Each structure stands twice: as structure tokens, then as C-alpha cells.
Amino acid sequence: MKLIKSALSLALLTSVVISSTAMAKTNIKIGHGAADTYHMHKAWVKFKEIVEKESAQDITVDIFPNGQVGGDRELTEAVQTGIVDMTSPVVEVMSGWDNAFTVPGLPYIFPNRAGALKALYGEFGNKLLAKAENFGLIGLGWMENGIRNITSNVNCPITKPDDLKGVKIRTMQVDAHMDAFKAMGAKPTPMSFNEVYSALQQGVIDAEENPLGHIYSSRFYEVQKCVTLSGHVYSTHMVLANPDFYNGLSDKDRELIKSALKRAIDYQQEIITQEEQEQINAIRKAGVSVTELSPEQSKVFENVVAPVREKYLKAVDPELVRALESGKN
Image 1 (cartoon, rainbow, N blue to C red):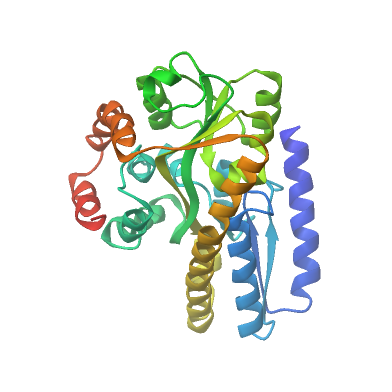
Image 2 (tube, helix red, strand yellow):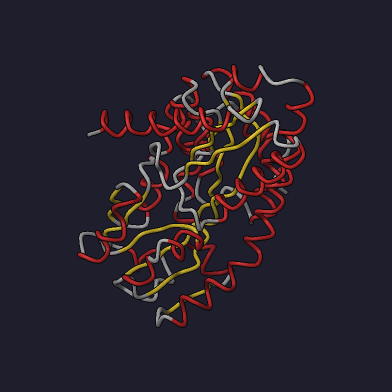
């Protein structure tokens, strides 16, 4: 089945490239795993609009959302091999090559969104982007995935770690995330994102954790009783490009790509600011309780997972940790 899907994906990409390159000097193929209603996809659409307009269609951009070409790991490998030119996986996907990429996704590693963005667009983030070159990739920047929150069908509302004891909660296949929920007493259950809705609906799992954008766009709230704005992880996408594609661009085109990406990322932040309160209101309107933790309640969660955070920080270059600490405050 995977081989068939890969062959179909390659055929799809090839047909698009043939039709696009007939009219343009350069065609950029971008793949990602998120829904086409998600703010990260909207940022890529903005990138496409800017690039095509400002290049006078000398560069065209084709975007393949919804995991059409594969999940984050498959897409990253597709960029390495040049099947796809650019992608934006969650940064933890890269931890399979270097555990330094686990750091941005550690629980409560950033004080808030502003601190995360400051660190990622400073020395800390630049050090991580540079590491991508060791694995046949060019790191170009960061798109937000979102601040991860907990939804559940049991023990509602969840206001303390003890409320998660014995709860089967879906997480990504990320060791640090699973360790954090184990520390809270939960039973982390990694599974494919595309399986989460039906697993919640059928009671295979009790809970899940995701940014509000995913909770809303994938309609998880339809099969959950409560949402807790735990904010336990700031989740980020790492923008990656194939080196042959990127280095083969003219200086002028590279500058356009960098400029368009920055403006697309700024646009994404505008969308997130606008959408989050609207999403909370819509989820509440659907009859789901939404709980905002007090600073004291959040601190309890943060303290429970502190040993997990320290465990993973000890496994990376102290210079990276220093850059993180100086950059996020």
C-alpha cells in the first residue's frame, strides 16, 4: 500500500511539474501534512501568492496539503531526495537524526508564545536550522504548529496532573511527550494523526493533545467533552528545503524566497491571533467545556514534568541550552 501511495504521489507531482514548468522557469513543489483549513497551510498559500506575483510568474508554487505525499517523516525524506522541494514538518521529526531537535518541543520549555518566537528567531533557532545541513537539508525558518492543549472525555474538567491518571491519551510518537504524560500518570498512546478522530469516537482512546487549530479544524471537539488550555508544549514546524533546489536558485530568487517566507510567517501569526478566540468560542458553542488554567494550576503541571525536561536537556550540547536560556526571556 505504501509503495502504491508513493507511486501515485510521484505521478501526481510529476504531472503538476510538467504542466507548471511549461509556463514557468522554476516550479517549487511544497508538501505538508496539515489540513488545508489550517493556519500553516494558509501561510504557504500566502508564500505562493507573494512568490508568483513578485516573480511575474517566473516562479510557480504547487502545494500538496493533507498528507497527500506522506506524513512529516516521509515528506522530510522526500525533500532530502528532491522529490519535493520544500516542506514544514514538526521539528521533533528531526530528532531521529539529532536529539537537539527535541528541545523546542519539551514541555514548558518556553514561558509563552512570545518567548518561543524570540528564541526560535534568535541564536537558539539559528543553531538548530544550521544543524539541518548535516542531514542533506536547508533550514529556512519556523512556522507555528501551535500551543498544545488537552482534550478529554473523562475526568472533566482536567485542572491538575492527577486528573490524567490512567487516562489513555493520544500523543505524537515523540519520546519527550510520552514521558511527560507518563509523569502525570496518563497512558500515552501514539498513533497517526489521521486516526485520532475515529479513535476518540470509538473510545479506543479517552483523550488527545493538540494545538487549538488542529482541535478545531479536525473537529476533535465533536467527540470530546472538555478542553483544557494547558499550553504544555509550544509546537513548531521547521521549514526545510532541498539543497540542490535551493542552491540552484539565482541570488535574486533566493532573496525572494526568504522574503516571501518571512512575510508568510508574519501573516500566519496574524491569523493565529484572530482565529484562536473564535475557535474557543465555537468549541464552547458546541457544548464542550473549555477550562483556562490559573498560573498556579499551570505551575503544578510544569513542576511535575520538570524532571523530563531536565533529562532531555542534559543530552544536548550545553551551548544550545545556553542559547535557549538567553534567548527566550
